[in-house]
Length: 128
Image (cartoon, rainbow, N blue to C red; front, side, top):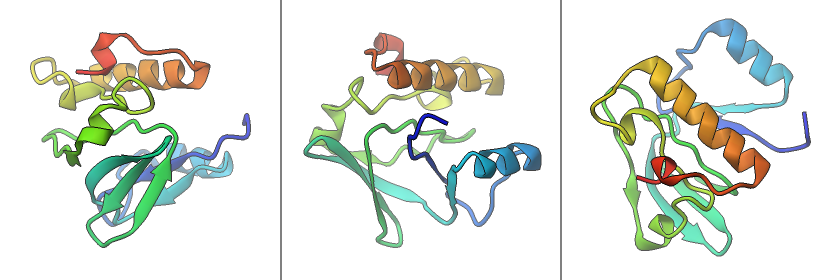
């Protein structure tokens, strides 16, 4: 609603999210990209470049991965690791292997997204 372009990259062939949420996201202008299994993340200047298994690439200002129950974090090269807390943050199960609950992951992701939107640096919990 504030003019930002938001994309949701989905590893599989379709979203498994609640259909009403998907419809509302699309109504708000969110781009849903399926079959986007991200295999690498690196920094390209001020942008973060995500590369998918099929060779597609996505350049981003901010990245917040939602990895799933069995974390499959793509390879983070040195340039990407330097973006940790400055546009690339981890949340949920990929960051916290002990407290693996959907509600915790959702809240963690929302907190980091709000900090990104506000232009604030996240605390260390978003960067582990």
